Amino acid sequence: MPTLFGAITAAASGLDAQRTRIEVAVSNLANAESTRGPNGEPYRRRDVVLQATPAESFAAELGRAAGAMGGAVGVQVADVVQDSEPFRRRYEPSHPDADADGFVATPNVDVPEEMVQVLGAARAYQANITAISLIRDTVQRALELGK
Image 1 (cartoon, rainbow, N blue to C red):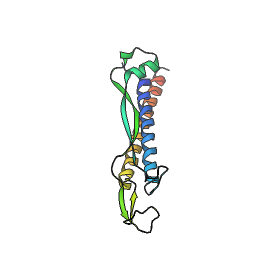
Image 2 (image 1 turned 90 degrees about the vertical axis):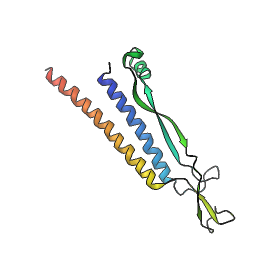
Image 3 (image 1 turned 45 degrees about the horizontal axis):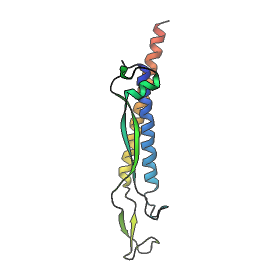
Image 4 (image 1 turned 120 degrees about the horizontal axis):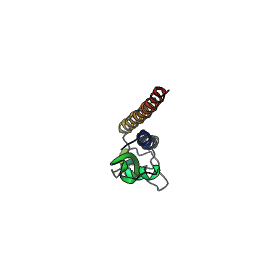
C-alpha cells in the first residue's frame, strides 16, 4: 500500500528528472550557434530519456518488502542522448568554419522547440512541488486533528 512518504519520494524523483530536462534544454539553447566543438564538429542537440522507477528500488531504499508498493512509483533519467538529426547548413562564406562552397554546418538545435521543452519541464517541476506541498499540508492537518 503506498504511503505518504512514498508519494513524496515519487514527486521528488520527478523534481530531479525535470531539473535535468531543464538543464539539458538550457545547454542546447546556449550552444545553438556553436559551430565548432572540441571534436571539430558543431554542437549536437541533446535530449533526456526518462524511465519509470520500479517499486522494488523504492521499497529497497525504504526497507520494505519489494511488492508492498506495487507498480512504478517514480521517474528517473535513463540517459542523455545526442540527437542524430543532421546539422543545418547556412550560407556564410566569410565564416571561419565555412566549407569550400561557403556553407557553415550549424547545430541541429531548434530554439522554439527548446523553449517549449523548458516551459514543459518547468510546469512539471511546479506540479511536483505542488504535490509535495499538498502532502505536507495533509500531514500537518492530520497532526492538528490528533491534538
